[in-house]
Length: 383
Image (tube, rainbow, N blue to C red; front, side, top):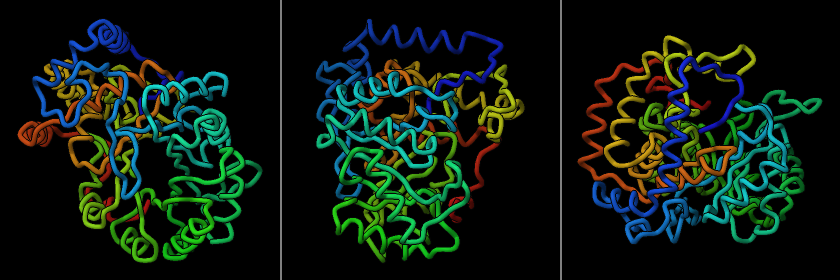
């Protein structure tokens, strides 16, 4: 997600200033950029091709199974403590979420573990006035002691208890997309699917989702109760789900929701080879953010910069548009705490890359030696 952490040191300010300059240029150029995008890439159903502002969604939608949503959602994790940012207040974050709604975003992602609990409260407050106009996704699957995460718990009775509390925090009577956040090794996923199915029958949820699961687990759950969407990390850089996960989703008619679409800000041009992280920062524990990895991985950022510049796009926009071009059932949920970054992200939805462009980019990507990412076989195990 394109988060805005206070725990980084960057030896060169060029990265941040270039992104700010791009956003300023977006505001000035407006529909001129949209026309450029239409002229260089395959644009499918694009309002921007007709001169519409790139900072609004327009009539564009996508399908996650039977669920209709905007082409990108808003990942809200970064708005709470325990994420890659210092915690933000509801006073500051509610306007960001409502600003997303005003710009046509209809899909919002949260979880009980974010905070924990505080993220759902912020999202619930922000969306209460427009609850019937949006799709609200949240996740269960952890147990808590003294307000802190303490392992996993997906027993049917624990799911029911968790959802009752989630509904109160979210100020709603139903959760549109209810995910199992992480698989509980002590509870068969079929039992989880059955429990969520009962909640759906009662109207407390509408659709069932899974997060970070293997193709085998997805098939088991789907056989018990239809799965609407799978959420896992996926980006230009992090591609392990291309090993059977996406193909299984396509086969079963399951949507796919990538988190980390801009690789925790790396593909948003937030960092460079001089970036370092303080010990308390979660960035310090990410394998592809070690000093050695960042230096090596600058090659992919430079490639994304080049491709984006040729198309009048920021690196973040290119990264999101690339995901949208992979499959029509993919709906990224980039996260941010700043409205102007959200507007930048929305600009990506008006571009689709042709098959030849995607093939050319993949060929160039495969020549790079990146460091710190999941092994291909990691997709075949539950996280």
